[in-house]
Length: 406
View 1 (cartoon, rainbow, N blue to C red):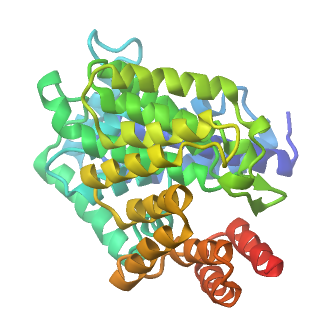
View 2 (view 1 turned 180 degrees about the vertical axis):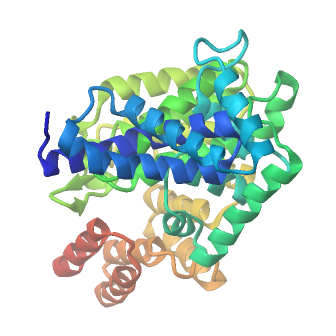
């Protein structure tokens, strides 16, 4: 049964978003060869583009792609050096494809995350490697997330894979006594995956679902650790606002969002998960961020938002996880709670420090506060600078609208 080319392209694109991480994770589990796994996954998607127009789109695209990738890996290994090929073939043939052993987590993607987050790897390499292999982000996309050069990120990925091979890092979820030391980088991986999807309404949307799914699995894996619950709550509360974040391709700020479109079921779940985390009385940065999101979710409008509480939470977050971006967000909360001049003073101090040079939200925030303060000419200059630095079309359209309003 044939299928139209446009339908095949749409199906392959959807499968890439939904299945890439699982296909690669499964192949790494079978072969322990990261480059081979990625190459064969790419070959499987190319094969889908070539054969699905003729044979029709399979009812289970993920299973089709996994089988095609595994067959491609088997063929590659047969042509490899005889000894290594036979050993790897035995690993493929001997692996039980049924239920996982008792005590293991039945998700190759989670095993892949913990492998990527091994302490032997530098922290940024752990995050970058997982984004590349599990989420299927390109090297350029990862470099953008890290605000670094693409060539630098490519070298980092190569070194990370080499380190895993040379050090014999196991492909497994570590035993309970080793879990806490891996947790911070695993949480960072999941949050970056979520944010990559959350920043784009269409092409990367599946990443948010992937991150939320893995956060749920991680929370079940570590039921006595509050931070996985904090991260899950943060994701749910942010995801609840997705439908109102853009309007016809234009970014809509939190102040202007239609709160009737917020997903109240996700908000209720996020607040309940946060309460579960806070009950453990061991605070952490993800719990604090989730508490800030919960403050916004509970308010019927901007004016009635508990801005003093949000400012205090940002101050606590800055103590736990110092960051100029956190300081910028705190400045906005201070402006809303103590007055625009107080917030502007903090933003100006950040600008003088140079810690956020090239970050478009710094001049965008300055512009908004200057506008509120009636300093129109200065606000216009700041909006123009933010427009020059804005990374997406939705943000550029929003800033253009603000400039036109002035």
